[in-house]
Amino acid sequence: MELQLIHGPWPLYTNSFLLFTPSGSALVIDPNADPGVYEKALADRGARLTHILLTHGHYDHVGAVAALRAATGAKVHMDPADASGSELLPLTPDLVDEPWPDAPELTLDGVTFRIWRTPGHTPGGVCLHTGNLLFCGDTLFAGSCGRVDLPGGDAAAMRRSLALLAGLPLPDATQVLPGHGELSTLGQERDTNPYLQGQWF
Image (tube, rainbow, N blue to C red; front, side):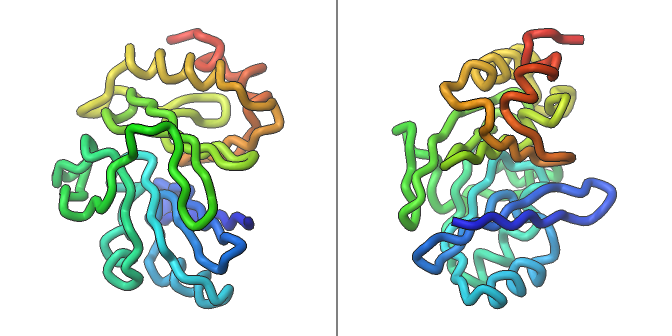
């Protein structure tokens, strides 16, 4: 499995990720760049997009969802709590093909994701783990965490979500792939991120 990082436009510069599977398919996490950027990356690899995985529903993480879904037939996976059709959460329930399952794991095209529900930044936030990759959306950043002062944010829920991430049974070498900013490792965040250490300002 190979990973490609794609940045959305300034000023938000949202991180999104294309995962290319051994079977020749691809999955995308939080697509917000110009849809043509993803379509070119897929064409360059001869891969077919089959699934769109959303860590949460904020507009800066879902901007390319409708276009990619229409162009490829890829299924959209997201917590319906974040599909309200508002300016902040623009996706509507009809654009979410499959909510996250009640089971803790979901296998797509031979790739198994462990799903951790991490509300706080939004009610429907999740973090996704596969292999040595932890996709954190806007729950955990390198050295920081997602804001909780937007509509639907919940500071108490964020504290619980960060405590969950700090205690995950994953090695320190696990790559932390946040929704914005620099990439990190779980060990680095456990050692240096005050929010992951239980501090709150």
